[in-house]
Amino acid sequence: MQGHPKVIELLNQLVAEELSAADQYFIHAEMYKDWGLSKLFTRIDHEREDELSHARVLIARILFLGGKPDVASRVPIIVGHDVKSMLTSDLDVEYRVARVLKEVIAYCESVQDYVTRDELMVLLEETENDHAHWLEQQLRLIELTGLSNYIQSQM
Image (cartoon, rainbow, N blue to C red; front, side):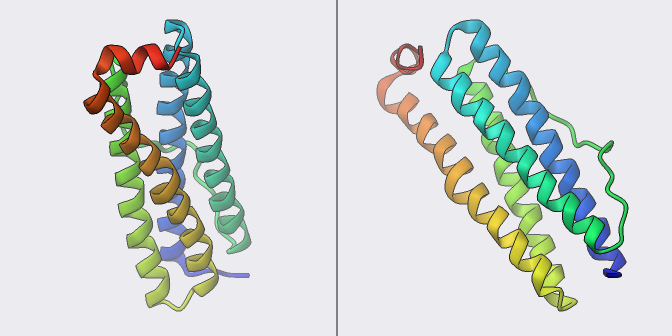
């Protein structure tokens, strides 16, 4: 099937977002592991896997639409230096990905590519209601309990 060229271009931008998010989660997970924060390692490593599964969905759709997936492009990542900055930068990534997803969803709607739109809606649901929500909760727990208590709970 031949897809709309702009849809394919936008899907490739999303692939770059998702792969960059996976890269950031990867380094943060390894930092948590090195620091002995096993609970954070486990969760963030899971988030990395989720981002890769999102990229897989996007790549499959690009191929179905007759496009060529761009897996080399990335957007800048921000590696935190401590637990709070790492969680904050991960949340910023999720907010950015959600914003881009909404823009691409709107474009797909405008060109009547409802199947792509529906697939992206699933990714948006996971981004907003799982990934971002969990990160917001962690930052709120830091505010409520203090950073030292939060870190202790993640060992």
